Image (tube, rainbow, N blue to C red; front, side, top):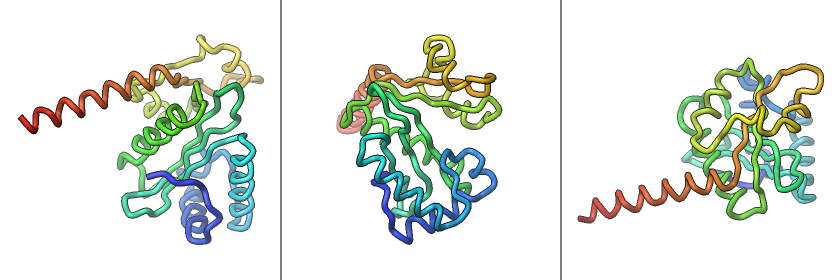
Length: 188
């Protein structure tokens, strides 16, 4: 479902084609206007991850085709900002939710991340609805007012959502418990 970013020609070509779709491109944080620029940005992303500045993964479909990326940017004080995009042909098929779940497990259980922030443009209704569906996400405009002010310095453009490690962990344990209970019922 997720893998570390690579400079592979196949992967980069596929991701560049998906990223440039007009329904996707406006919401991509690091925009590339040519394939060469995309390769350069991917190389910079890999190097930034090696320096501990971000965490970036390629999202794969069930046949291991690259379909988007999921990233934790601006890592500071065990917190960072989530950035995700998925190619238009894969919208509405559940990949976003699966990718987030796998990524959050890595961030919270394998890395030292305590908080994931989501900065979502107020007019991006699709992303806001997706964030509000997550049972471990909370609107943090007031509770994290310093961060909210930081992302909206000139005027309010973004809403701020927060995913704390403890809330995600509770969700994960509850889901794991439900799966185990279901498997027990099937055996009975």
